[in-house]
Amino acid sequence: MRNSLTLACLATGVVLALAGCSNSSNNSADGAPQDYSYDEMGPYAVGNQTIRVMNHSEGRTLAVEIWYPAASAQGTQSIEDFAADEAEREEILTLLETVPGQCTRRDTSSSYGVSPAASPAALPLVIFSHCFECTRYSSFSLAERLASHGIAVAAPDHARNTLFDSGAMLNVAFLVTRASDVAAVLDELLMPDSQAVPEALQGRFDASRVGVAGHSYGAVTAGKVLQDDARFKAGMVIAAPFESPVFPGVSVANVEEPLLFMVAQEDNSIGSLGNAVLRANYEAAVGDAWKVEIADAGHWSFSDIAGIVPAFNAGCGDGERQTVPGEPFTYIDNVLARDITATYGMLFFATHLLDDQDAAAAPGVSRHPDIVDVQMK
Image 1 (cartoon, rainbow, N blue to C red):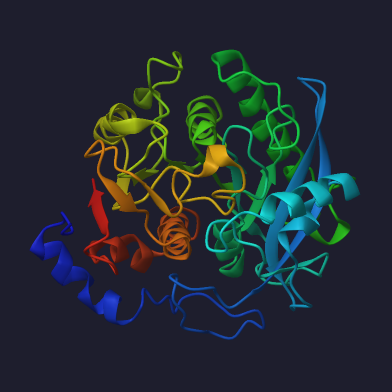
Image 2: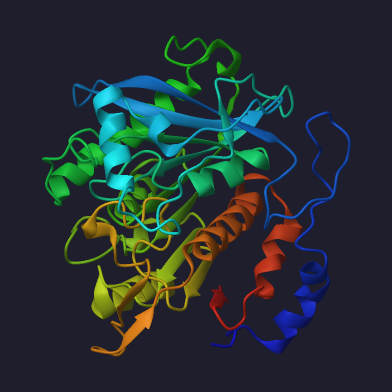
């Protein structure tokens, strides 16, 4: 598939492509100017910590993972280290025994509990909402990429709607609960003396530069949040429309903030109809919008836990096309799909939370023109 942008836009971005979307206006962890590429990990080491946040409006406690730019790296972790307890850890290890290595990402690039970098003093923040019955670390590749370039990420486990804690319904009522989870996390992180937040991160989050991202049910959650909460300045919508007949009351027309829509062309979860609605959401966007379509990607190609359970298989290994029913094919390599997701997510949030004009122009050139189709408006 050829990139759908005009030749003029391609010409504008050619220098950026050669430079790897470099950004010379940012600083390294020690404050020195440094060129680097958004399509790879940035100048900061990445730290992460688990905190507990109370959603008072719903009377529920949330496990929340925070990724942040760190002062130094002190070793990485395995995915089972995210487990809440030993029983959950054993369950993850059991699940991983039968998962092909490329499907679920097993090792992190972050260090647990390390000190945050001193600069930038005020951290832009993205809150991530996971998919239906997924986990707060479903997209830690995206979180690590953002944190490595100076943007903190917080992701709650939506209680009663996780891989290990199911029972919630895929409906409007629980969508309201999920959106309130996101608001509660932001409330807590913006509280300068929050006892839930590690002391070194208290008061570090910039209330004027907050974004939201979500995958699948999380994409709908992101749309609900953007519609109802003016504190969020940009949103990344992955593999699901947020305005659809399934979730009345959420409207693209009510969202003026910039939007990034990620589309899996072989999405066997929402199907061709769901993708048509997702594309219609992009066309209806009233503010700046990007649409990034990935060929041969499935619903779970964006996720770090693709294939961890059979329900998450559509996006890893061999499958059947939804664009040509009955035709067998092999999904895009999962490492590449996650990298593409992290790159465009980073470019989008660098544009709207870091005010990086180089990042704003960079999608004019696709690094994978036969795989990635980009439209902007």
